[in-house]
Length: 384
Image 1 (tube, rainbow, N blue to C red):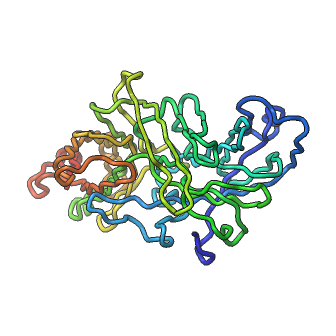
Image 2 (image 1 turned 90 degrees about the vertical axis):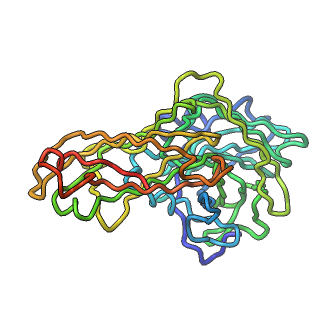
Image 3 (image 1 turned 180 degrees about the vertical axis):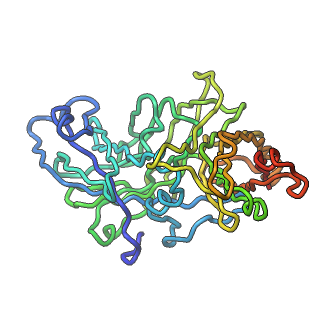
């Protein structure tokens, strides 16, 4: 369980259960099918989500970030802030399913506003089972949930259609949900449990990864940095053997012994023809400025994608080159780097969900001391 002395996470907002409230709240929370029977009384309850996420495991088997506790979870805010340059493209909306035994489920959005995920919702008294995924905007089609044998108490099957296959977001599904206080979840909270009575104001969520990832670590060559300044404007990640969209089915089997409830994840791209091409970063004025590369500090960008057996990616980097008097000398330079996975992954290692590969890239000329002035202004990006 999450300890009381752990740093508090940032949270998000959800507005309204009914379409009647959509115009005022700007968000939605709608019943999937019929309303609850008239003899059941609903009350307005303010809920605040406390999301945590699991750690990535790099291809050497080492966890990529410090442990939050024995489960290895960290606040979602830590992951969200780790890749600061990409935040204009990363949505942190949590899509939630409020389920009850023998009732049609309700679903809705908790949108991040500032440091909070808070909303007033209508709930009945009694037992709920909460399921969810993040971020909502990776899904371009329908979302649905169904109970497994024995009902939602035993688990659920979540279906997501038209998932973008390459994104700058860490795509996750909740593997635990439950109530708690401002300080910590209730006693007995654990991975594999999804019960919530509706009497608590706080919902604690633990998320686990559905996608694999590459962490691109950029820097500029030290000698070249003395002569030129390079600013990254855009990053795209492509793959000719990956579809641009997939449909996904995630099976969660609840348990009381702390085991990961994800018992099956399947991706199907047979309905789609385009190949993968995802935008990871784009500079857009003051809100999202160009990224100045440094020679002594790596700038990190995250690229997440549907897991599978992929042998080749292409990273397309667009950047500007300035002299040391801040004059723009080359605009919109484009470098394409082919990434052959057999050069980086250990033999037999596949792209599994939750795995991360770190790739280091250095912007530099090939032979700095031999370059003419035009060559100096058109550097290359090298992988290692």
